Image 1 (cartoon, rainbow, N blue to C red):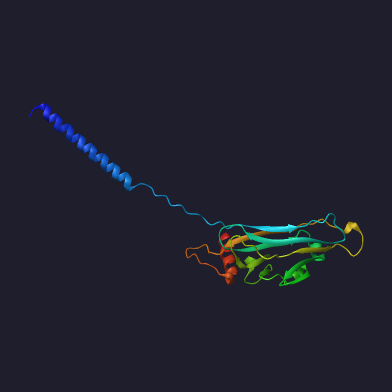
Image 2: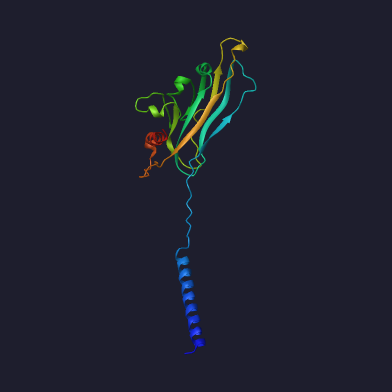
Length: 211
């Protein structure tokens, strides 16, 4: 066999080896091609939807609209709670909160209000035995689905600054309102799904993890 034929066979062999290598690499790349999967994380979000009609001027006695509700603006079922209080306890203790329970509207002092809440709301006082971690908040005891809104916690506020006519007794104050929420699926490996009756357990589970 002459040198030209030998060289030709050698070149052909190299081409075959290179081609085989290219095919192997191509197959490897095909086998390891990415297949991205998209997962949407549920949003646990809420907001206070408040209707507030501010008096033009504050008098010795006043009644104004203050409708406090909470809307689930996220994408998962949740439990919600509300912190509500007056910035000045002296004004709070002279005021009444108007609420509707069933079809009955009634006005209560602060202390009365805490035990006469609208349907499906519950207040847990500070330092309540067994529920210390929950104290100081108003809890909506039903599951709130995305897009749903709680019943009103309060609807109106009546203030009485004094029995006299001395405008100096009128005091500036705020009503502080904010809401928090926790999803109804427990944040643990088991992924426990809470029902309406489990609202306390859901909050305790979440708050214990947050400490």
